[in-house]
Image 1 (cartoon, rainbow over the protein chains, first blue to last red):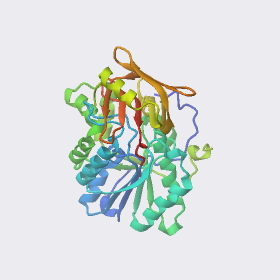
Image 2: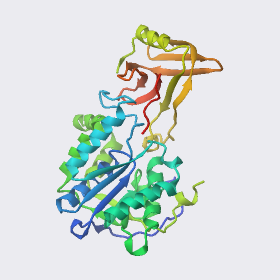
Image 3: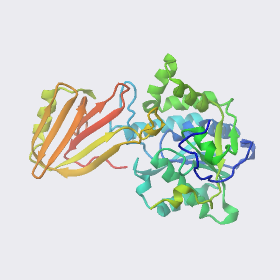
Amino acid sequence: MANPTTAGAPVETTHAATPAPFVPAAERGLLVVLPHPDDETFSSGGTMARCADAGVPVTYLCGTYGDMGRRMGRPAFANRESLRDIRERELADACAVLGAEVRMLGLRDKCVEFEDPIEVAERVRAVIEELDPSTVVGFYPGYAVHADHDALGLIVQLAVRALPAGRRPRLLAVAVGDQEANRATLGEPDVLSDIAHTVDRKIAALRAHRSQTEAMFVKWDEDAEDEQGKAFRDRLLGGERFYLLDPHHVTGYERNRP
Amino acid sequence: MHPIDRDAVQAELDRRREQPVYLHLETTTGSYTALGPDKKPPVIAFVRNAQVTYARGVVTGPGPYRVGLKLQDGWVYADGLTDFVVSERDELLLAGHDHDGYLTVALQLSAQPFREA
């Protein structure tokens, strides 16, 4: 069914018709760069665990402490001031489950788009140069729903773009939200990671992000989800999908930045 | 946090009047409202570590509660507050939570600046 909100929207770039599999054995290192504790697990947790299983070093460079989140646990056990340290601990636990090392950029939650993107991109570039991963995962700028996601997605793209041609890792981008609408402009995702063997660890890592996922698990456990909730769950526990993003492709998001 | 005890909150507001205090004031729908059934855009605002001095601060309402702080040149106002706690750093934290436990509004006062990332 055509989505009325995307009808006539410009096509970003042409992606593959059939996704290629994600092959951990072909990787030298995986670096995931996203803004919040839990973004890594929701988007890529199964793939991170697959890489760890294959002996591939996995690092999560996390932009913020997620300290402006509104989920406080169910029942609430966190508050605005305690949330920062709680989420930092939850992230450490989740990444221990997934087999990933954690690093923090220390940006302010919700304020990533107000930073100087070049300055932050320099810091991300330095981490890429140090770790020399074969693949970097970021959000797809403009297709990531949350303003922090879009902003850090662009920053990661700028960081990869700034590297010399022979030193650039593959950039895989995560699109969030209405998948039909995303397909209408982006096409099919280029890479599909089969997480059947690591989905249990993805769920364990989701549970480790307790303050953020408790309300969701209450609904899962009571089977009290609406249609949209069920679709989200199926997608979350199915394969992880990524778009191959050319670091030089100027997205609509980048073009329209002030 | 605990359900608001009006007398206890009033005492905390009185204790902090007539001296510069750091304010954290916030309201949020969350950043993912566009994914909800109504596809509404998010509505979020916060002020963190603005310094204010109030001559009069009052908590009112049957619950959820309202707080108003009368400044020299204006007002601070919040509605929908349900819970409070005084943190170990002696910060007065007031917040509203919805039925899922999600924070909807926060009004916080502290003699020291609130922590920054």
